[in-house]
Figure 1 (cartoon, helix red, strand yellow):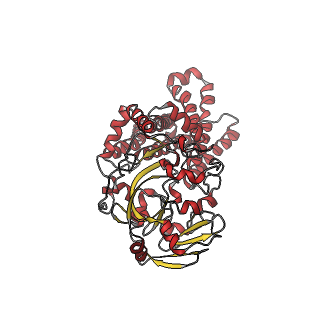
Figure 2: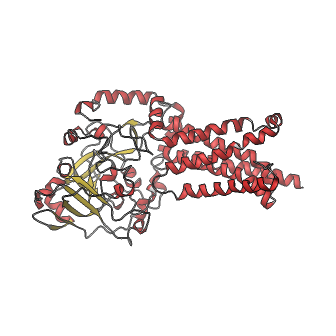
Figure 3: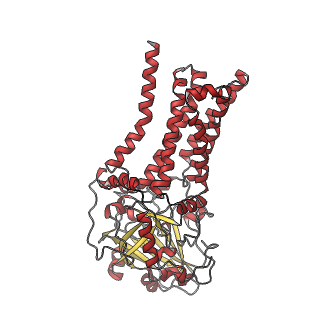
Length: 200
Length: 312
């Protein structure tokens, strides 16, 4: 019974993680993205990537502090979905927005340094996604955990990217920033408690 | 960088660039976004989409098609209501624009309070199709109705001491909830140097698409300076003062490193958050190159010998 409950939870998480994408496609197909659809797609995919990243970071403390063990089973999936939305966000920028025009993209990046921060965050996710399989986890052993702590850096970069990109209204990015801060600080305590053998 | 009129992209070069950029478009992206045009987004709102009046032409002088009335009336930056572009129209629906008067004063011989109707009957309404380029990197082509600011200034006879024109928007937090906070210094203030203000292109708009302005577009009277970023074109004006000192605009006060007094459209002067070398015309997928002075070469002469990077 326990086992089946966990599976159900996992499926629900997969479905939930795909809902924003389905909603985006539905809204695009039915013309509900407003008068600047590319801006809307850019914003939504970026925000969804951040939310999923935060959820993946929340799994370990959810287990440690609240005994929510099921969270650990969906941690990797949430991280991979964060990457999927980040990839869509990045593709929206280079393909939809800039039509793969390299010179325009280079100009845009020089003009908007926050784009570089976002791109760096995206790059840091690639090795994590590649090594997210069971095979790699085994192969890397203890180093797997060490490698996957890179996600802390990713989260900080994403918050910098989001805050820098906001116009004057910093309430939303800073709210996410506060959540990320709490999740990262919770790990400092974990480490102290468990003598350096914290989770991810 | 100093800008000579010869630096402005000739139309044929610009157009061939456009064709190139269009042809280089991504098929997948096109297919994906083609779906976005199918339904008019405003039709999903609470009210029926406003219907446009008649216009004299459907293109600007460069051959750009007019942006749809629905887009112009539903995608607005008007922080006095809300910072959400899509919500301005709904929130502004009950904004009271009549009766309305504009006080013209400061360093003028004939200070006066003008009723809006008097302004319109005195100076008339002519159609001017202008490109509107927002500092955020999007643009529209809008058929305004209005009259040259210079006609009004002539009427009040500026004194020789007057060097700048200061514009002030309505301040009424009961009607404009955005003025209750947001960290800005309300009311909205903008300014022009006198030579910019009396330039033939500088318009006081009272309508668009053949109809009076809707509240979300800055009703009942607003400024339009087509070679400057959109935020210079102050909405819902209640005061115009001729002054000696350069006025400090709301945006200069909020972020002086990002928003200068001149705010001339200049693809060479980058902004920390938005691309200024290109723009997206609302209703189009591919980006366009932003033209110096938004393509209004007539305005270039004003700035002869001025360092446009320093005075951005």
